[in-house]
Length: 314
Figure 1: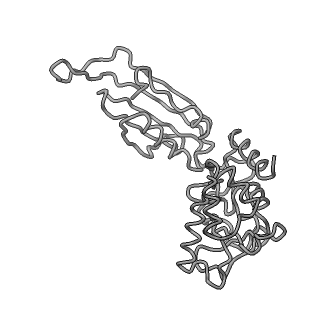
Figure 2: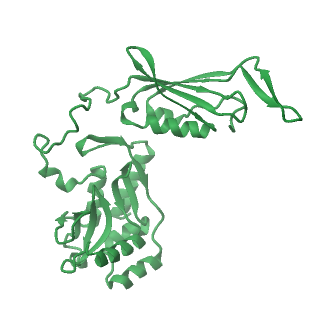
Figure 3: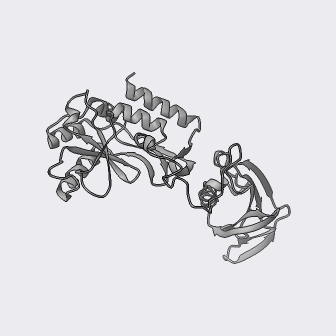
């Protein structure tokens, strides 16, 4: 197995074990997402060589033959993005036309982006395997001003994975005492050995609709001085919508290690229709309830609240 395959296999094992919670520079933390698409098509490789009259560096081509691009360690829109080869062709040609690749410094291909800047391959350096060819530049400006990463693609990829998608080549120039490293002053302080969650527990109540085609009402409570405090309340047409909304809220950093209690309760009456279509209210003899406990966001995602019996397709 080649170097690129070994590195990516290690990453896939990490993801499969659920190790997706990451911490990057400036205390950027959260559960990262990953996308590794199918291999590049042979005709796209041929189209690249036709467009630029030069083959790809062997390590970069090996990566593309495994995955045509990638999105790694993504926190929202931020992370390590490697473009599909068709996009590399398009963006490089557009950059030359728009002046992003300066005509006096036009020896670059744009292959991806990270941290408000583009990842570049220096085409002259890429003609030999012994010359580091990976570069980076801010989105603004032209290629007259670029930073040398000092590696070829294989080592760049491995170190980027070790650094969780961060700009590892800049680590030695930062000083946490002088570079405005920490976030705003009102951000809660995090001490070693203490949970980063600012909320110790939350309470979620899911009220089932009276009418079978009605809406589910969800109330989300945090706690102040041991008393539940309603944070938000909304209604949804289906349980899938309920799940999506709760996952979106609970994925915020302050809830990652929070104790989560979910109460589900069926209405004591529900309505049906007779042959004429008229709604008829009927009492439910034994309204169903369900309580589920979770130790943090990941536990919630791994075992979403199950709908009450009879409501599985709601």
